[in-house]
Length: 438
Image (cartoon, rainbow, N blue to C red):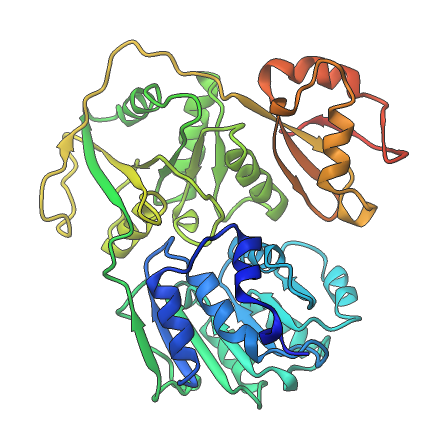
């Protein structure tokens, strides 16, 4: 059975989408008449859904690995896997990336998936160890290809391409136009779908100018204006700046998440989970968070350090004002900092109200030491927490269930009582550890 027999309307309904946008429709139509596509579209435009719906009709349900999606970061791999699972397709999907045991992934290949999503380095590792047969792969996607080149994955991608003799269709996805396509991709005859100039939403650009060495104080002034339920990403150019800002925020006992390449995979996932579910309203991050992470809604982008490249600036701003929404971008600079040449106009000065209090987030995150592999699902966790009389449905927020753990957002004012009441309680007759996620 081919996936084409699955109704596209059912897939969109599973994704919670009423209809496709113009870019997605154009990609699907072009895929029917062209073997190779170059898809150019900004962050947040729905590129993942566009290319998935383009190749899904060409996938059979029982012929091994037929589609390979390469992505530059673990977070983007997991995001793509999440979208595929939300589609509720009758096929198996595997995700492969560094930062967790290779043995677990090898075991997952005991029944080959129809779709494989992975980072270039880990996919090369699997091919070299002959974990799966790559000869059945007919659909090849390079997501965030410009970022893969920037991260130095060209040699890994060249090796992977050399091991795929039966590729019929390639889709190269990028948010940047000015990329040099390597010869090993054989994309001389490709059809370009260019939506890179599309305006995704209404973005307001502001700046604040502070005295020398007072950027941390300027950041706190901005963050004090963020209301409960709003959120912001604070972008820096280097991970050591993340650590310096974190120390400053620790001093003022502010809740925050941090995200950079120096963190272990489980730490990065936890930090993003807490930011997504509202347990933290501020994410301090390097440009690794500018693309390929799953944050559906973002109110503010704050440039604590201005990036030297215009593309980086645009990708940061692309995290907010997504999909026709509005958003705010704020630059923090000192009296000694010049604005980059790629900004044609001086941004408006941001008006900051004095003596505002920094509010605590509405939610906290509970950690449960059981997950999918222990046969625990969201419904089980809802039932467990609502067994306590003082807990109401509205006291539960976002629930994320991983393979061996789960995270649940709980209203802050109920957290202490719930933490005490839940100790030594069983979930589905299983004893498990429950605590606050730190």
